[in-house]
Length: 293
Image 1 (spheres, one colour):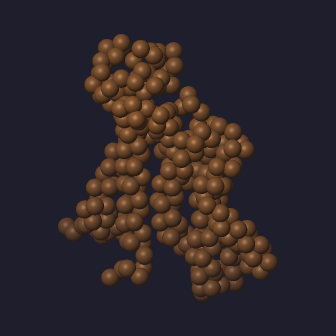
Image 2 (cartoon, rainbow, N blue to C red):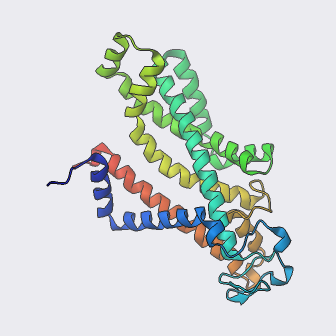
């Protein structure tokens, strides 16, 4: 009995050959599992302000708090258990990055693919808008929009969607423009099929590989943008301990020797982003036809 060889199985087999990417994938998966299971594994709920004790504020790692458990990574200025705050912060980062990335992916793919299919002045107008947006740094656009909308998860997600959809739109337009010239599209149009069916069922699926590569990078970028905006005070409110907010809260205590308030959330953020980028680089290499042997 022989093992069936499928594209998905071949993909994972090739992925596992790169030990760095495999280690990064395991770290990413572990972080995602811990973030999703934060209410079950975290010793404290950092959102429950009524149970925070100021006597436990700014305590060093290993301190036994008034609640009776050990604060393995210490506490912050509000008396939050830093390990719990980091797990919940990762949960927020994952939620914001995944939701904003998924919506930006969908919106950008539809805009880019539709522009390539329609062509003419509509294509020129849509892509000039996209190019104009791409001429500005994503952090600047996200900062301005977040400042206008105010603090909150949904406002931050909207800001990240607007700041990132153009990357997907430009990638989708390039891939869809190449697909638009192929014979199978002309055959589908000669049947004739409805334009919506040709775009969604024929052109878009064949333009997905480069979009998937961009998605892995943009999710990491969204998490980084969320942390940056929260650090600057225009992202999430202080009552929601995102990683950027945790770093900002401990920044003023670095020179006093209480390094753990900023350092440990920073390490968690760097580890998550680097792991995602390494996974994204490997996926990009595997989906790049020029690198296929």
